Length: 177
Image 1 (cartoon, rainbow, N blue to C red):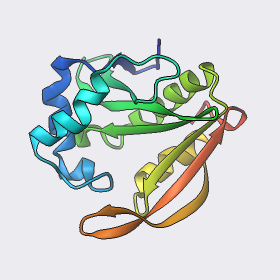
Image 2: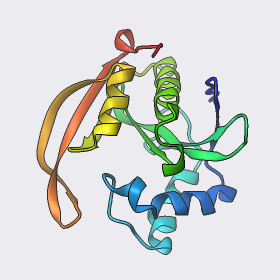
Image 3: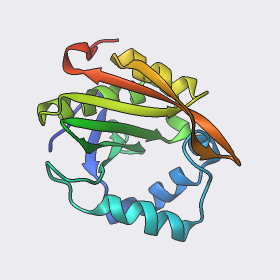
C-alpha cells in the first residue's frame, strides 16, 4: 500500500523500528490517553510483534506504518488502521511528543483516510479516551463527527474512562486545513 503526504513518508513497521516504537509506547506524555505504560517485554510481545506481520486487504490486524519526516528522516510516530468488518476500518495514530503541534497528526490522518477509502472501506471510525482534546481536534479537522460516548468503557490509570466515538464517510473527508 502506498501512502504519501507533503511532509511525511510512511513505511510498514519493521524490526529496526523497535527502539523508536518502545520509546513511543513508554512515554507517559504520548500514552496518557492510550494505556498505562508497560514494560518492554509486554510491549514487544503484545503490541510490536503483532504489528510486524505483513498486512493485506482483509487482514484482521493493524496496518501499522512508521511515519518519518521527509526533510530529516526522523521518526515522527506510527499510524494505520484495522478492518473491523462490514466495510468499516478503525484508524489510529501516535506521535512522538517532540512532534506534537506541528500538524503532522492531521496530515497523516488525512493520508491514512484516503488510503483506507481507496481500499473500499465505506466508513472509518476512531475511539478516543474522553479528555483527549488534541486527538479530538485532529479528528474533527479531518472531518470525523463524534457519534457518541461509551460510558465507563476503558480502564486506564486505575479507573474506568469514557470513550468518545467518531465516524467518517468518504464524502465528509476534509482535504484541506
